[in-house]
Image (cartoon, rainbow, N blue to C red; front, side):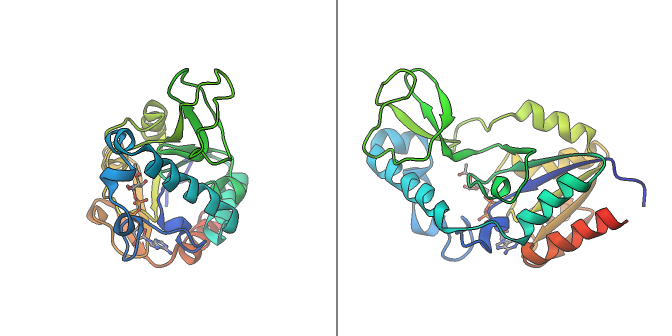
Length: 233
Ligand code: OAD
């Protein structure tokens, strides 16, 4: 195997499933419990802000009851011990990568623990409910929304992600169904740009055929095994 110097890792809800956070599209997942159009679009927010703020308040509060799992910790270990470059691009809005010890994490769909002010465009750390319309810490307007990317909005830091994909010699996708673009297209981009591509997922994802290799199983087992391989090889 040629030496790996530059790894880009894409994670999705599946990496946090064993921590007890519901995924979106598995049986009983969030999109079975709530309509995407109601809670994850700008139109839904305009129609019923209380419903949307309450939904994200609930998900933010639930973070206090969960812990990072072996997969999050293994990626943090890889980040520390790997001698090359590494970037974790997550679609997740939870904070489990960081609490597992990872630092080079880019939240392309935003974060539950961040607020965005619709008046002054302040973006900053936030750990309180929003349903009671707290004032923006910068401009005092009562117009905060969760700093998460909704359908129809542009994911964050796409330039930086594509730069990293261009440099990558290994692209690894963990716990994501491959149903939502642009993240679902990263495997094709990375592969066309010359990277080897590996999928670690409970089952084959929608874009599984794009990967050079696909391994099936729980992230809590597959990810530590793969990290051992990279560090030991
Ligand atoms: P999904 O719910 O679409 O997919 C989760 C994937 O994780 C599925 O392929 C499962 O098979 C897999 N999975 C479940 N448990 C697992 C485990 N223990 N170990 C490994 N894999 C497991 O979630 P995402 O792909 O993250 O976007 O969804 C992508 C985006 O769609 C989300 O960021 C969100 C959602 O709508 C926005 O809200 C903008």
